[in-house]
Image (cartoon, rainbow, N blue to C red; front, side, top):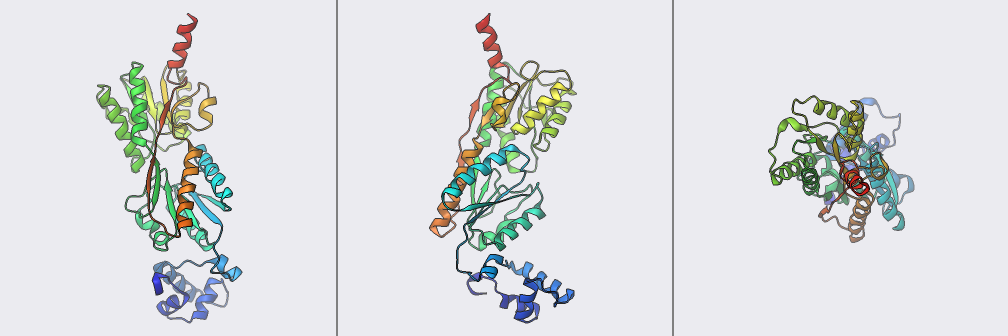
Length: 348
């Protein structure tokens, strides 16, 4: 395998078949029996071979594509829609097009869509890794020298660039704000416990409590899928706690909006009966009722930064990993009760 690149000849030798048989398998020809086809496909997977369909069709294997692959774990979350818009703004200006795919947190789906994108000759990849992703899941793309930028979630040990928000500081700011407003029973809602991002935000939560002189109570931590439906369910659990919380910080804005739903199902009003702080500052945060106090990440700006980082590597002709952490800020609105209280004091 010259220069580490797997060729059709390597596959033929390993599978014990002719080069033409391998070519027929790649073309999906019915002339190859299923036993041979299965054997050749198994060898290709084992060797990490990627069929460049675009190069085969166009007979221009030396040409560079103008396609950027973008793979996200949950496109139903508006954060990722905004992230994709930010990426698109930058890559379009640079003469590239975006090839977008959603994995719905499936590792198998992630493997499939990345392989498909590579077959179409993408020039680089931006990925928000599916839950449970490991460095080995990206070994083939990294070994091939393809520029890759992981966003939102990092993959420990993977030799690729990453772009994360300051998760620890963000949640710590949210807790400090609720503590300043007098809350002592502050819950943490949402997130998968087995992800690094959850652990970072939980650490920020614990630090925020400690700084405010509040003891940590594991009974006030409610992990769940970072979705609106699960946010409502988490709040229902919190309301059943004997010494229930009076406010909560949420893993993301989707969970926060779910918390609104869960509170209202129990005739409680967010921002009046219970304080809520989100994380992300998606577009809907400012127009929700009440307007959501949240940690601003700037999803579109994050998308632009990820695209710029990727294009820098593409233009340099080499994928040198960089780790970037973007700053966050607290945006105070009505859901924690502070702005409403100020308004009432001014009108009194």
